[in-house]
Image (cartoon, rainbow over all chains, first blue to last red; front, side):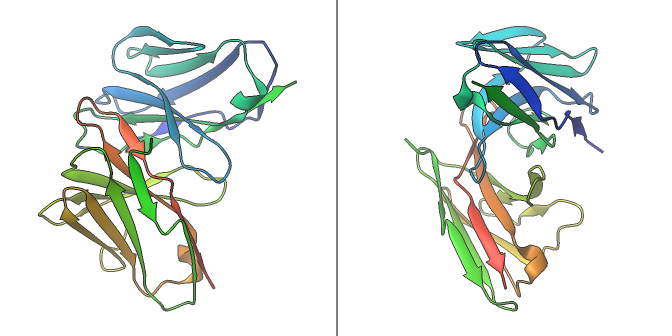
Amino acid sequence: QKEVEQNSGPLSVPEGAIASLNCTYSDRVSQSFFWYRQYSGKSPELIMSIYSNGDKEDGRFTAQLNKASQYVSLLIRDSQPSDSATYLCAANSGGGADGLTFGKGTHLIIQP
Amino acid sequence: GAVVSQHPSWVICKSGTSVKIECRSLDFQATTMFWYRQFPKQSLMLMATSNEGSKATYEQGVEKDKFLINHASLTLSTLTVTSAHPEDSSFYICSVPARVGETQYFGPGTRLLVL
């Protein structure tokens, strides 16, 4: 059974600091990994996707993937109050044919 | 702009009635769409894969006769919750995979409340 694990938090980070979000997955077949941000009452919006080992940077966001450790992380630099949300880690087996398996999400709070 | 739309955005119905939710891909054709369900303070759970021109594929534990899926065209999938009960109250979200790569774009969701 595919599982994606996240610490539910809440994770509290001061404004301007780096927020670090972590995720592990159980299915070694998984090839594609995603971080989504979800505000209360809204649907998820894509933040980052990562497919190969290493780091991928996009603006203030950096995703990291380590397939050997089955570990995915998201770093948010210069955290802003508007970054306060639930961050969902998701995995699929690649190719777009499979739906996503989501973690329960980490609730991030950026303190002004 | 929005890539995926859903209608209605919210619905309140009486127990025993059926509710239809539409999911439309606005930017590209989609032979596959996905339906998820999210209960309060829980994560998204994949319910089924909607396939254009063929039967939907349901995840374990999801009743195919209760949650009817029709993928009528390359831009439209519908989910019908038949004989809805209060335990079906949830946030129903569809997604569409991008043409290139595996990224999925989510619709805005439909909040269902069954009284």
